[in-house]
Length: 40
Image: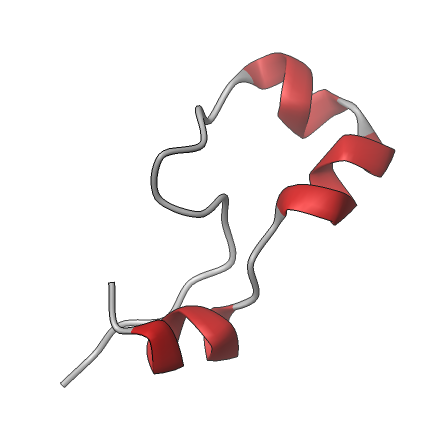
């Protein structure tokens, strides 16, 4: 079983500044389906 979630990839700091900046957030976020396939 694998878990998928929307969020920053492993190794990318989950900081408030990145989450508050829509452009940065959209460029860095990995979608749940991608995370599930990667199987982190």
